[in-house]
Image (tube, rainbow, N blue to C red; front, top):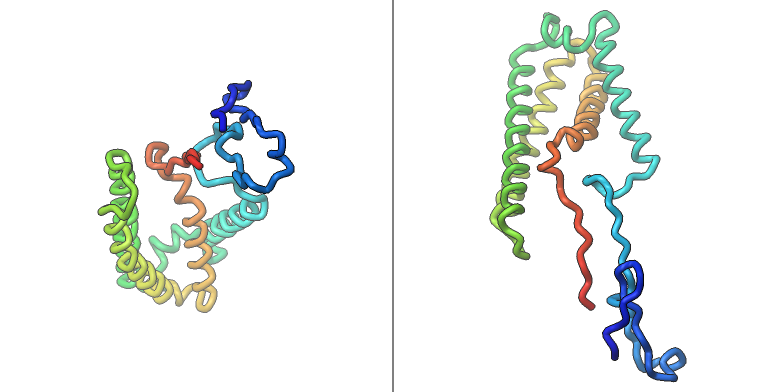
Length: 196
């Protein structure tokens, strides 16, 4: 079978010399290697998002902004956290330490993954993947403990509304965090070349 003839667009057109190729079921090749590839250059980031996902993100951010701005209807949330005597301070500070530890774990694993991918391009499970996976239970435990401590500390102000309030703030952080990563630490999405 011929390798192909170059055509415009960087692809190859395969030449068929057999008269019965189209009607015969003998050659079941999918012809994927001879099709021209279209490469699009777009900003790095996750693959395309739907409008529903974007609407969800906007709703989480708007809800968090509402919570931060209105607080307890008398003061904003930041002022309350700093000056309100109803808040239990020790659980609040311990929860902040847990969030700080969680943040350090995420920064450490992100930098570890970024530096390892720059220097090691082999296939298989690598040391940085094992380290990242082994840190996951610690991050989960710190997150759950911090959520419980924040709930206990803020319960005197919002009572049962404390749980949805904290969950909304958590989801808003999950929406914002991917956009705070530096450009060099963003994952690269490459089109892998097929060799069939």
